[in-house]
Structure formats: structure tokens, C-alpha cells
Amino acid sequence: MAHIGSSALDVFPIALGANTFGWTADRDVAFEILDAFTAGGGSLVDTADVYSAWAPGNSGGESETIIGEWIAARGGRDRLVVATKVSNHPEYRGLSAENIAAACEQSLRRLQTDHIDLYFAHFDDPETPLEETIRAFAGLVERGLVRYVGLSNYTPARISEWIETAGRLGVAQPIALQPHYNLLNRQPFESEVQPLAAEHGLGVLPYFGLAAGFLTGKYRSAQDAEGVARGSMIASYLNETGFAVAEEVRSRRRSRWHGCVPSPRFPRRSRGQPGWSRSRRCLRRQRSSLTSLSGSASSAYPPRSSPPEQNGHSLHVQRAERGQPGHDPFCS
Image (cartoon, rainbow, N blue to C red; front, side, top):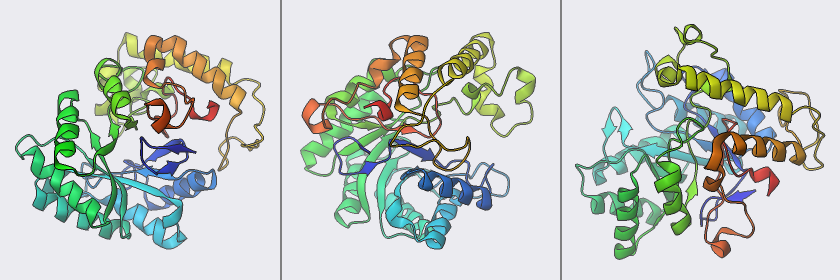
């Protein structure tokens, strides 16, 4: 298990991103995914109030609604650590105090829960005074509606300003960041955000770890991406460099995962079966492979030698989209 930043949130070190729920994964498929994820020991589910307002016929909140229905059907609230976000829902845009309070109420209703474990400011809102936003989040924490606060898509300058302001006000500090980071999008995370996260003991839950699916290698040409739901998200990768990196990842994954043996902690199961995993030995090889491919990316995920509060950095929790470079929590 892994702690997110300096918090008491103790989670399985791979999180499940749920932005496809209600979009490319309907309710039944989402239930199967959640069942398999929790059966394999998974606990952290990451969503947002806006997911998936962009899909035809949707209005936002579909992902939260499905997760809430799964919790109600399975009685699984205590099995999940739920992270969601505010600021981008069509009816609740921005980070004013009034908007945050209203959006949180709706998220709680859809999730069918009385608290959110980790509540992210999804996108910065420069039109609202930062102090107002910070006080609004702090109020939710004080009321017990939110356990911890996180920042998503914030610049290093604004992260620093938030931390400084929260410290001056004496209110809850953020415990996690969620940046866009993968083998094809390494900056500015590695050069600017990661040092800031290490300095302040912040957990990091990067999104698009597989570049919206591009790094799985399923797109071998621009034609393969025509008409697919995530076509616009991977458009910038459809070039010689992108295809070369994706093919290298595929090649190294095939060679490094060959001949792996089951771990006592994670017994062998059939590929695709809930809870299926590879051994620590295999995961070490995968980590080494990706590190050599991505150069200095391993610096973004320092090895866990002691608890976060003792060694000054957080244990970075990886999202369920496999293939991110750097620290492999299974090999701690």
C-alpha cells in the first residue's frame, strides 16, 4: 500500500482513472472494471464532476453517477478512496466559494456518499481571488465533507502561491498534484513541478500516463486513429517521434515481461482475470526498461526508502494507465 503525500490515505499504488465511465465505458462495463479493480486490491478511483460532458447526450457527472451506483449496489464505499474534481462542470465552472460549495453538494449526491476523500481543484480560476478558493476548500474539510485537497493542472507558481496562502491562513494544505505527464509529455513536470512536489511532500497522480492510450501501441498509423473517441486527444502524437516511442514501449514490454514468475503477494492468474499481476522481478525489469527509454524520467519517482514524512518526499501514486516511467511501487 502507499500513502498519498503526507496524508493518511493509504491506497493500492495503482489508481483507476474513470473519465471513460459514461462515455466509452457504459454502466455495465464500468461495473465490470470496478469489480475487477477492487478484486485485485485496487482502492483509489479518480474522477471529476465534468466527466463526461463532452460526449453526445451527456451533461456532466455521468462518471460520478456510475461510481455512486456501484457503491450502492456493492456496498463498497469503505473499499474505495474516491477522488473527484471541481471547476469544469458546465453548470459549475470556476472556483468561487459559492460554486465550490454547490458543486461539492452535487458530487456527493451523485457519488451517494457523505464525504470525498480527495477533492481537486481541476483547473485554476484566475478570475476568483485565490484566498477565496482556498477558504472554500478549507471549509469543506472543516465540515467533514472533504478529507483532503489536491491541485490539478496548476502552474508551479500558482502551486507555490496556494501553499504559501494556505500556510498564512492556517488552513488545510493540498496533499497531491495531478499533472499531465507521460513519456511524450515530460515537461514541465520533471523540471519544475516534480521538485516542488518533493519539497512540499506532495503526492503526484499524473493523468494520461499512456498518452490517452497512444502508448499502448494500438495506433500504428494516423488512419488507425480516424473516427475513434479519443482521436482529438492523441492527434499531437501521430507523427514519426510518437510512433517510434510507442513501438519502443511495445518492444520492451514484450521482451521484459517474457518469463515472469508469480509473486507470493500477487499469485499468478490468467491474463485479464481480476487481480492478475506480474511478479516483483518482472516489474523491476519493466521499470528499468522504461527508465532507460525515457532518460531522466526516473527522477520524477524517487524510490521509497522510508515513509514520506521521514525522507522528505512523497510516494508518487501511479494511475491505472500502465507504462509510466520511474518509480515502481510494487518494487519498493
